[in-house]
Image: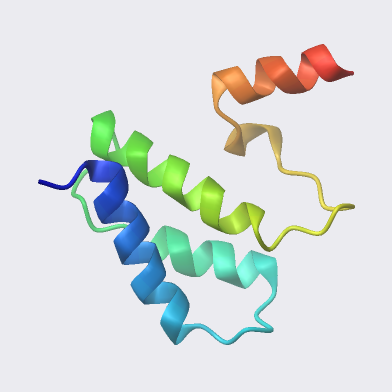
Length: 84
């Protein structure tokens, strides 16, 4: 039995296979957001999707790219503030 996160990772992996390797991060983010297919954007399935999306997109961020605050989980925001 798969978890919501496993299904989200699999869906994003399928999408990634269709995207060009040199696609800008903004367009890649829009494509991943548009690929969401678990119904309403709320509750646990959406949280699992957001986590899988963050994990995927972090691979394409350059060191000078900052992840917008709204894309971080509450724990990630707390850790970011603690490190400052």
